[in-house]
Image (cartoon, rainbow, N blue to C red; front, side):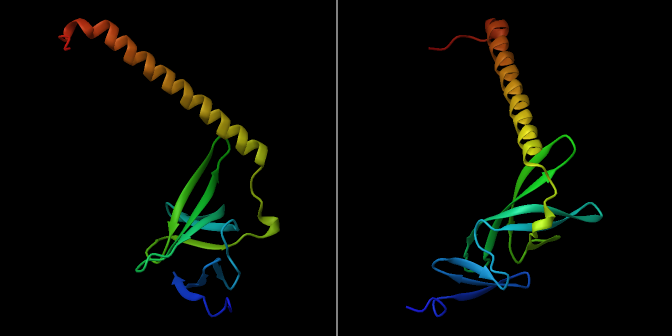
Length: 145
């Protein structure tokens, strides 16, 4: 069975992809797990961010790639997902080059861990407020059995 004959050609924003049973590829041979640069418009300018292709959904009318990208700032890092297709506005992708590494793994992991601690504390605080409400304001509500 010739794999070239089993390939379909799909275009997403001018990017031609060859779709087959084993995955998809572009002239640059994109595949799930590949590192890419994601050019995103933020306010009035564009910013290139590191990303990874998560998957491809071959919807009949709107083929779509799912891409996770990292928005790393000085004190925070945020992992976002974009669904890239023909209707996606103000976003472009390109292959990641070896010299494009614009973040430090340890710093990003530390920032994400810090966010987990912060959110865990927010959850603990919200749970405490609920318990306080039920304990303190319970007399205002008639018990139902």
